[in-house]
Length: 161
Image (cartoon, rainbow, N blue to C red; front, top):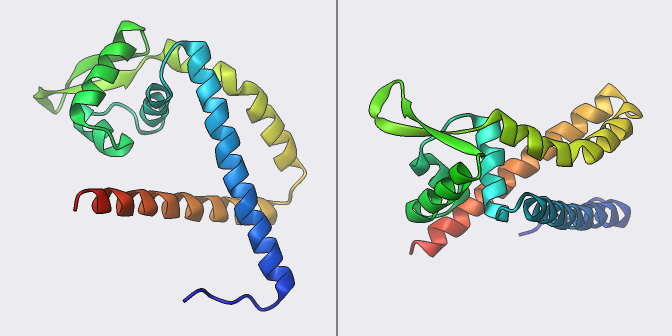
């Protein structure tokens, strides 16, 4: 049963926030698609590079889980990214039988250059906010991220039935 807000004004603001989140997700998806096109890679390839940038070197199996793609599809993606110079394979120092995939510094720098404008505008916007406001926004974004991951996991479990 949905939780009822205390007043219509709160309900209206919550609706506007949810709509803004949907609009933002769409705009960021479009931005990532355009960046991927400029780089000559697929949008999923760009997402893989973001994952490697944040998490560091990873196995193909771990990337498969994080990206929601089959291991075969991830292997082909790694082949494409390696050929284009965005990633390299290396033996796992902890287990020589495993191979780790690592994003190249040059590739990550090239990708980062496309985000410089939005990063600068976001930082200018944040400079006008108080530390308390920024902390609240950060908490909201982290919780929203966790909710999205949970929803992805839920959809994956449903698909597996």
